[in-house]
Image (cartoon, rainbow, N blue to C red; front, side, top):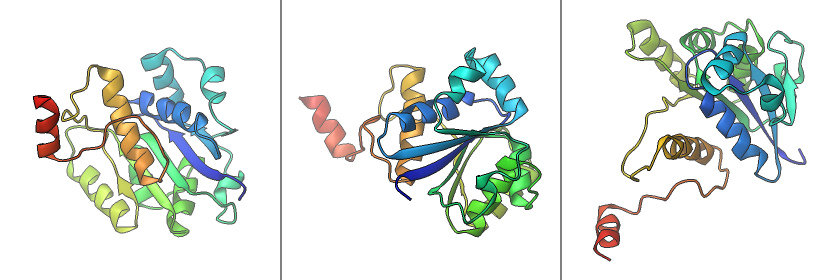
Length: 198
């Protein structure tokens, strides 16, 4: 591979902003090729939550794949990638991944990432959780995936929603070793207290 390849999928849970923001950040990072897949419900949420056009979102990715294109490059383990982020990940997609149901390109690509022992990160969006959700999260974790609910953090004292989104995206990028300057690194309580006293 001449550049790093990351798959970004956007499914029908609320939180389309996470997937779109990750695409923006990865586009601005040299040497990363992004492959985008969006489900029909994902497009619906992009429109509902962000009012961004399909063309505008697709332009953020290096390559765009149709969700029904199960013959795409991403459907084969021979196509090398550094892994996959599903942001947000609906409970339907989580269940399909947990049970190996490769019924569209999102779930097939996730299955490939798992079988090839690459990194899979699912920004699972649902609350409260029922037992099926929890068991599916356990199954994905046991297979080597990372379940990453996009929960807001407050220790960095966010000034608004954009700071909360960027903090979550920063943590996701960390999982793939992608350099960024989105959020301050926690240096411990003592360092935080010393910063306040200055």
